Structure formats: structure tokens, C-alpha cells
Length: 95
Image (cartoon, rainbow, N blue to C red; front, side, top):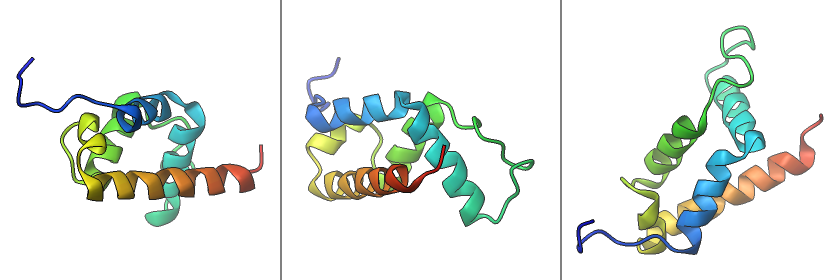
């Protein structure tokens, strides 16, 4: 491992756990469907996997690695908003 690469801390670990959460991946499915006005047959629930979730978080936060969430203030703030929106969605979501 390169000494110049930042090590992940609590946010990176939280992001990794979030990517493993089936509810978060469902949130990404439904978010994308809504954003792109797609039907469930065009983008079924269960489409996003852990890697997709990781890639989405990195793109949304403008980072290459989740470890950067603990060292980049802007990315950390974006990640915090993502988790807040997910929690809000989860609180409203119907089973």
C-alpha cells in the first residue's frame, strides 16, 4: 500500500457498510428509476449491487476511494447528505 494513500476511517467504514445494505441498494434502484422516469420493468428492484453502490457514492462525492471521505471535507459533507436522504427515504418507504 502506498504511503500517500489516505487510510479510511469512520466515514469510509460507514460507506462500506451502506454499500452492503440491501435497503440502500433498493434506494438507489428507486432513485434512479424516478430520476430517469423509468418503469420497474426497465430497472427492476435488485439491480444495484455492492460495487454499483460503491461507484455511485464515489461519483456523487467526487472521489476515487471511500477512504477519501474521512479526509476531504466536501466529500464528507456530500456523504452525510446522502446518508440523511437515505434515512429519510427509509423512514417513508413502504414494505
